[in-house]
Image 1 (cartoon, one colour):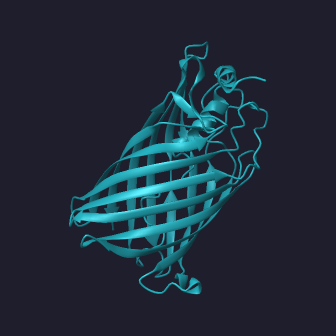
Image 2: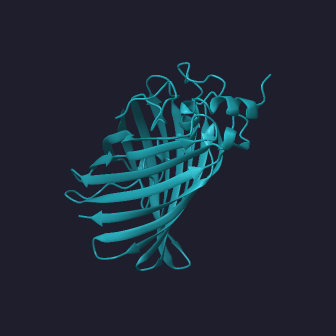
Image 3: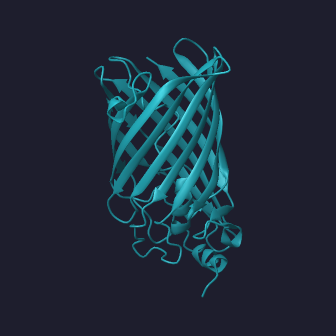
Length: 298
């Protein structure tokens, strides 16, 4: 039986599947979670968040959840621009748009060399509906919201491994429910947001179960600290379409930690600086990535 390291080395000559493993770690299939999903926007109000992330790693979490190096000194990289929009259509309904432009790169010391792909990624559009969790016995100050997202791939995959891919393909439908409430810690105001979602996907990619925990705390009136835990678990019903069956890249899980600081610039604008770290996983990339964001409330 081949060792995991030998399988990784073999895959380095056809890194399309290897790059698919890295996609989750780089946040490519994840919606932007820094904005609490348990709240809806006031009618006629909204916000735009434009975030830029830059990730690279020489390591991966293999099918045994152990961290290993890519074969032949391989390196996966991502540059990602992510505009996110919310708009309050009615007091109970918020429209959502989550868009991605990416440059995916892979290189190694073998014949593959260095190659990159620049393309639009999985674009997400949907609605969020105010649904307080009173049915679960949680009264105010608890709030809640149900959310649906349609996920559309705006790219073509390179199944022959000739170029890195910017996504795993497949149309997705995500159904999410989140609850949240204001909190106070050391006399500082903040919030906590808890959400879970099921993402159903067509084609080869596995369906996913997602759990997200986010909490924000105002350190000063102008400085907000946000901590997040995002868990993605593939439901092991995907298939790889023959790209690279030894790597099994469509059955995976990933645990991502994020910490960021948001500084109020004016009444309507904020600047966000942060870092995300891929703390655990299976068949995903490893490492971490700094990110910067600009928030505009309107």
